[in-house]
Image 1 (cartoon, rainbow, N blue to C red):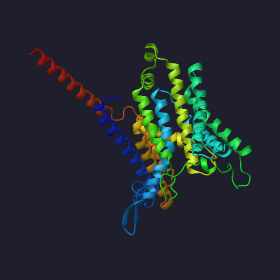
Image 2: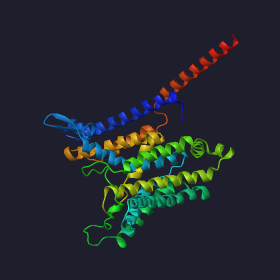
Image 3: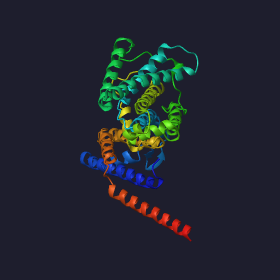
Image 4: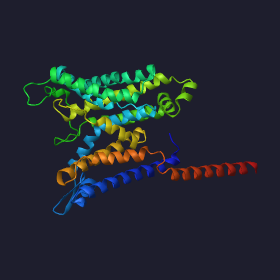
Length: 373
């Protein structure tokens, strides 16, 4: 992992990028709203604090809603972290989330099991299908040298239109007023984690478990070390004897497995039928989360919480004020720009590096003097 002394810089850099992005959003709010201060109140504290009759109270259901919104984006964020760590800019998680949700839904409808393992089987099938689909851009990259960014981006729309084709012509429930599948079996549904009909399901705990698993794989195994070394210097990794091609394929397949799993858990936990008509957006959000987390799996839940909180705040602004909900896209774009800018706070980073180097040299000199005496 990176030098622990640079961790403070990364925190400062991340906080500065977020604050600047919020500042950009605030400017647009003042330009577009007739009640900007009310809108900012809903954006910044509205998701967790309810104000009624001048009294503020913690919004428990709002908190559960934010945690529930984190479930699919934790999986896509982890997927992107693994792939980006190997310097593979694969963006197919978006389409695979949709396919994973669709496949899990079909398994929940047409596979009959009177056991609680039904939901596990559905999610497992979604994960396997997601991994198999991700083999397409991975093998094209390794065998033909095709850009994984281009092939994976186009693959999203192939996935979406295949799902819509089969949904419309093979698996639609014609008794409904809108295009959707038949209801899932009750055994395939993922239950709520808290009482009261909350959308916060057991999938949240599963997501946190996979955060730990991916962190262990990335930082405590030879496979994870190989992924990170390939991401830093692919030519050197190949020269040192690492199986670069196989590792690149495996990293992308793991990303596909995680994305498919996230789609399956989201659909079986939040809905009773499959009714997505377009790409859900969780894959794109996963890219932002991975950037915020600096490709560190342990920071993915924090980044996912931040994005979910902003989404909820923007929804409240759109509902109770005159600010469009698309404000979240502006804020996310600003965050992306500041985080992606390599020269952002580069001067401050250089000062820290020089200071740390001088401190290390001073320690070495002191140690040598002590040994000479």
